[in-house]
Amino acid sequence: MLIIQHFAHDYFSHKLDENYIGLTFNIKGKYEGTMELFPSDQPNIIIQEGFICIKKLDLTVEGNNITSSFSKNLDIKFNEIKKISFDKGNDSEDFQINVPQGNYKNLTFGIELMDFPGMPAVMIHAAYFSQKRELLNLQIELFDINPRFEQALDTRNQNPANDNDNPSFIFEINASKWLEKLSFEDLENAALTADTILINPSNNVALYQKIAAQIMHGQNVKLEPK
Image 1: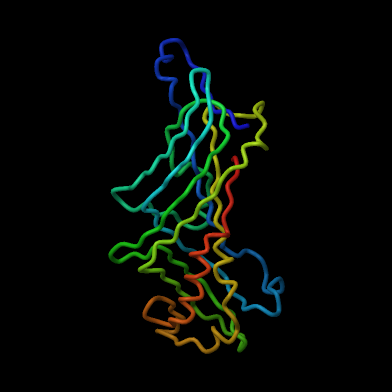
Image 2: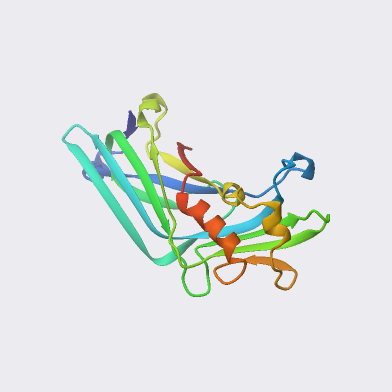
């Protein structure tokens, strides 16, 4: 059972019907190892940087407190796209969301990505170490589809004794998994644009479709307390 509660002076007691939880996005993908660690049967792709653009965030909660049982669905559509960079280098909270205080049986986060003029929903800058021992630039731009990721927290494994007044969670996306379906043949035969393997709806379309399918599956995510 996950418990979200708040302690404050009496002056603030009238505000305790709701509290907030923090949500931090961690998009894994930046490679910091050595070439020798790559599997011999998979292309050597090194993600250097990138970002996702979040258009909508939703949260489903279910639980109870001393006054009632509750079930709440929050659907937050942003007026401006929220851009989250890969491996941003800190664990600061990207969002703070008001929720009822109480004992939680269910807590599920969902995010929807969207591109807007001049910026893709997903951008990845990477490098491919070719079979000719050349390092080629790789740029992936996801346009025209809106991936959605959803993950539930198993509240049964949460220890109430360790709960914070305002708990915070990490929504982790493993972007390197999006590229696992690419083969040596795909990348060796890919068309180059100014010395770059450009993958988007107009360039190297077959590769784009492979990556887009992996992203749309939304399986390479996890949610855990910070």
